[in-house]
Length: 473
Figure 1: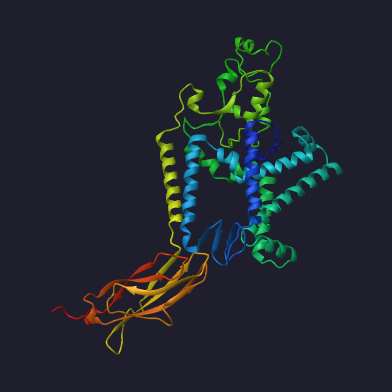
Figure 2: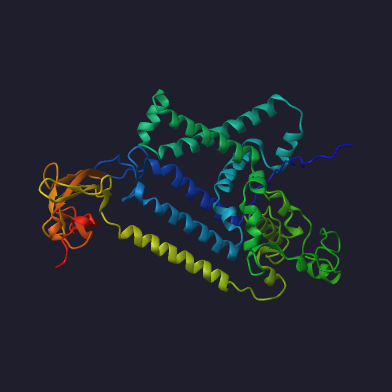
């Protein structure tokens, strides 16, 4: 007899439920879908780029987010956003468990829509179970095909919308339809379509259980004060456990006198769970804290005039009668680090220079002796204009008396909007004018246009061979 090395998947047929947490999940779902699907189509006036409110231009290496233009050299902002996301996740998890998974995760949001489609086509939980167990028939085939077709439509819309963020949306749609779009556009759309269809339609809870690493390490961030979806075992079980409301066990006081708890073992909390777990068995790593079981239990408690809260957001300490400490050192530390990182990121964005200059000294050779005895150093200059207007500068140097600046052309520079210029400049100086082998000075950009008001400077070093220096008398 061979033993199976893995457990076969048990199909889950979640039942629909109404309640405050289900309403909250729908509200977040509509908000997230509204933002994701509408952003590529919202116009935003730009002087030298497509009028799209969010646009990631890989060819031009510009990311447009409202009025913010992110350049390749600003990639450290991405690291800042990722750090903020990680700290915020740790902070929220330490206080309220896996609420991100239950309300905001892409897998949860898209799976909710796919399950809603399934219910509309195949019916409620019992109808879907009967349909799955029934032999193949034209009606069954039609419902299954229609379900998967609608899933593919949502998946295609998801993949296409993601692609629209990387170019001007109307142009990309036209190119995709006419077959003139570049290959990456088709590849990205197809990849996102297939992954959305598989993850949200076919894999579902297996993504959270087996693929997502967060489900595995979440327990490290939990403690006895973390709020989780919990079943009040003492109230629900008491001495004799849970029991259905049979004769003599319907009145709450009568049940308590006989040692039975408030749980009537209706199974509604299990039926609505998208992960297929029984929360009455305690906290399990599969639980995403969606709180649909709370809505289910509250609905039953209301129908039999029992107090709500048999299943609720609570902590281990609260269930055992101890106070829950939210503002503890760990949570305060995560909160402080999150706020500090956000503040630094905002400061970096709001105080960035609109025109940046980079200087690189060409070192092969680092210095050349001219026929007239002067030393010559070469420098590669790159200037980035981050404004949406053409800027004009006068290029020069300061801090190096007697030096000559040699350029191929005028010292006046004109830089187009959101573009850069790169050139090589020569600096010549007589060794008699310096006393050190390495003399520090600055290249200066003096604005002569209204687009920018502040001059820009960059430190540089002029090198003279030691044997060329004039000895100090």
